[in-house]
Image (cartoon, rainbow, N blue to C red; front, side, top):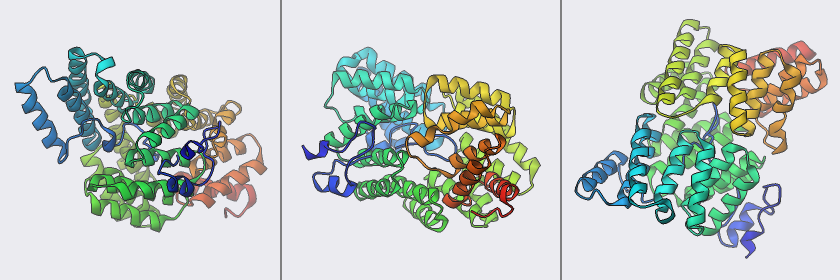
Length: 447
């Protein structure tokens, strides 16, 4: 089959996305992730088994009512567990995760995983949402062995393997998903795969294909937001803002798009509107990465007291998520590196690195080591994104500062210039620091 001739043994794709789409839709190369990054934490709603149409809260209520009269319906318990994960994603309320676990375990008690793939997939999705990616992988592989032709298995595996840093297996799972079901969740994950391998144009093509398959406002908003993220990554702030606006027009509750709009408005100098967006966002969906973004914007504006208040909120939110089984050591480690204890950041991120070898974790650990004054140790970790070909402004900035601390001025100059060339507004705190560092190196500060 021609669609199988897409992957190389390095996990990248042969041929163009357009050619692959032309021969049947199985094209390569999501998901949410670390601060400012949408690394996959849970499958897109379109990938959930037995998803109910309409408002998710109404779907939960209908399932609950049905199960009161039919407590032995294993399939409905599995679907309720998946609905709870979706509610947690939409509301950032981690108390839905224990509810999801209870519903899924009830389903598995009624029928074991070998004959209950929906519940096994649900457990994998729940584990991904809680950032327990090894458990998600194990549940996904268990479901795959039971039903290798069931397409709903593969979003869980893609997300788990991506976050574990097992990129060849992630690519293979994306390809299998595309072969089985060339659908919105497949093209969305293909887009992220291509982005992480340094192919933004192909990633955008995959997202446009996903957008063409989007049948409801939440799916349209999701695709438009991801297109905006690609625009942001290449420094086209106005285009990114337009994408985020379009996403919010499609679905006003799309909190990732609201976060993107806030960041873009700040980059364009509209700080009052950016602060209003962030304040609305963190009041409604206080995810740690959003709280951190607001705190850093306050800090960049010289409003230290308000920044510290947000950092206190972040610590409280991390504790709340941890109490409900969610680990967010990537955000916490980066926060500690820049605003708390670099030594604690190193300990936190070393533990995370022991759990998973994602390039996002490697970059964060390298940065924490630099902030702790351990630059020789930091450099190999900071170079990890290079092995995939993923070029990002924050990656380049981190490498540049580590090089500068090691006296590698030529390399430092190149990396700092690259960061500012890719996106001169990549961070309200670090972009100005990059310009200042360049000024110290060559007296210009220009990219």
